[in-house]
Image (tube, rainbow, N blue to C red; front, side, top):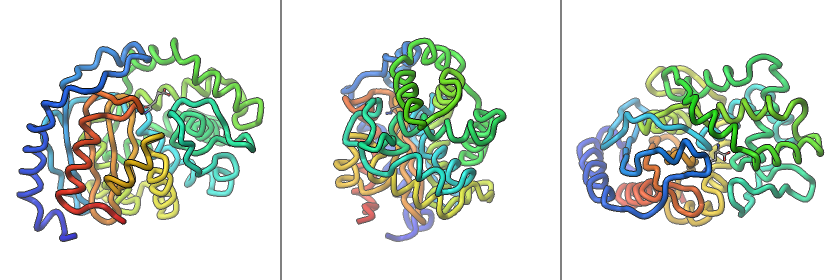
Length: 311
Ligand code: DON
């Protein structure tokens, strides 16, 4: 593929604007409502951003509108855990196999490990490992790490946090199940506060593009120049995103789009094409898997138009 920031600059921006205009008409999908506060999202918000590994950012639509990161956080937090605790410890606790199931599945592997860190069980175990090993304010550590990926300080939507905390019994059930097998230790409510807060961090489509570009740039944020994750953590996180980042749509996704990605029920999708670019989309209309309908269509279209499929 030619270098995006030089040869694709004008066509890319034009393509993003055209795609935004075309796909704004898609009205399939529903805003997530199982976390009541998320149900208040504006279904028409739609933003597309691309950030290149040499630090150019291209944007169309609502790229500066904040929304909660939700499961997209799982990618950066897995990378953080690998770097903070070491691969051996993290890999002993959390698998790297696709589950083929919904993100909130309570099923564990036959050896009682979570399938991977992209589904809720694995992500809760991952945040648990960070909480266990730091002893201090694990959420603050996670917030700062997410901010380093985005290249700016990130805040929290307290209303979404409270809303998920008061309705998140399924995640509570997953955490208690994990605790019976030693997958997490300590106080389950305290751990889930870390996880729910991590999911409630506010980002924009632009932030997701920059985070993706940081993965694509082998852990160096192309806007700040800061190294925010090791090569090992980046490569392994992208590998798990490829096989499991889009849940029970992951096979279809890697077949069609061919770029490692992670979605969240806030409506965000982050995709990262190694050595090239990060892609961030935001549209809260979700399909049955909890993935953004317009976001998937947008990533497919960009991948096809610019021949981004890795394989
Ligand atoms: O744990 C949950 O249910 C949410 N906080 C995050 C789920 C999520 O974003 C799934 N992604 N599509």
